[in-house]
Image (cartoon, rainbow, N blue to C red; front, side):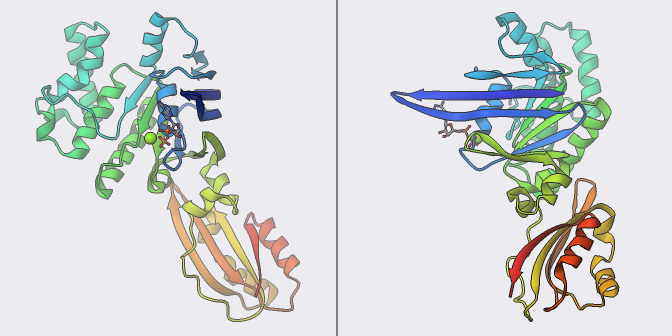
Length: 330
Ligand SMILES: Nc1ncnc2c1ncn2[C@@H]1O[C@H](COP(=O)(O)OP(=O)(O)O)[C@@H](O)[C@H]1O
Ligand SMILES: [Mg+2]
């Protein structure tokens, strides 16, 4: 588990102060994958630097499995850093070292005996599917393979948390999905907590159990995927489940509703059952159904016929767990 409490980072530039993190609090339970998304300048890199203690937060705390990493002595800091493994956008491997030498590097730094390093590295390479590439140099590997080396290296010190900073931004779509599958598999096998910093909603859709939206150094929306999506007015819901840009214009004059729903209902014929039950014609103006993480979500824009008791219909939809936003009447 990683716990971030009221983390602030203020940079001083001459007489100016830049508030890069304005009180970020976050809790990711053990074994969960949490995404942090935000535009350029939101504070993502600063957050990464403060979490890995490359940068000292101005105030606030970071704890892994209840043990605080901030405000510790220099020697404790070295141990603390090992609790968080880092994966970078470009794997940042040593070109002059083979796969096994790259993966073993953090263990050399901690003075681990050579034979222990050998055993551990072999296990790690098998874990990430690179056992056949132990003697290869980075230049002989594909981008996806290099990222696997980076992941194995990050796991070398048995961290409790894997912090991935734009881990797939330099990869093609197919390799992106393979790396995300690997991260999900590792989380299951090692019961590790994963934080993924990304600007790609695709990554959140594919891999994350929960997500935070960082803006101006603050978390402005957060929650598990189902809850951020059911907050129909939220920006994460709009970005994760966008309606097609050019929704058809309404034909009639009834009330327009946006419906967001999840799980079993997403595959149930919500609209046809509504039509049957209330004996009305429902006009579907736009819609999308998506598989996010391991669940189905649907986002529909519908128009009810004019002159009916629409509140009764809205109540019915809401009582079935569907988030309803009234978009107005045409
Ligand atoms: N070393 C620094 N000195 C001064 N300002 C900084 C420094 N690092 C980041 N900032 C400022 O903090 C804010 C957040 O930056 P950053 O964490 O790099 O955002 P992101 O990674 O989301 O693009 C920006 O306004 C940036 O200009
Ligand atoms: Mg950045």
